[in-house]
Amino acid sequence: MHLERFSLIVDDYDEAIAFFVDRLGFERLEDEPALTTKEGRPKRWVMVRPPDAQTGLLLAQADGDHQRAAVGEQFAGRVGLFLRVENFDAQYERMVAAGVTFATEPRDEPYGRVAVFLDIAGNRWDLLGS
Image 1 (cartoon, rainbow, N blue to C red):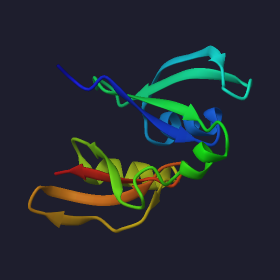
Image 2 (image 1 turned 90 degrees about the vertical axis):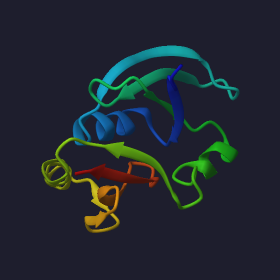
Image 3 (image 1 turned 180 degrees about the vertical axis):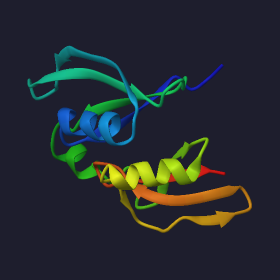
Image 4 (image 1 turned 180 degrees about the horizontal axis):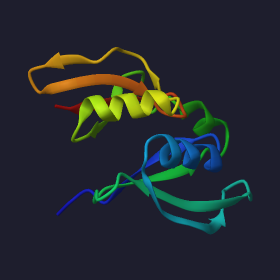
């Protein structure tokens, strides 16, 4: 058993794809038209994931006021997503150069190096490594 995917509500499919693929280095696995939203707008099935990972991230464009209010607040301001990398310092430098916003400087914890970064929607992630 494994967690196959989870949804992340975003403002715009293309901006989110650019962030996850171009800035973070994720793979775009799927990007296909899907049924329409409850408000009748077209939607897409967009899935990205880190290279060689099993778990994917389904990018879900906000539909309606209730969902738009959740963009960037899915974890109520807490770190809700954790990205583990092999070479922390190299990945951190690559992400900074790619324009990823970090909310904290890297620090050492008992479980390894960590720095908090923000995704395109403003959700907080831990970058973890050694």
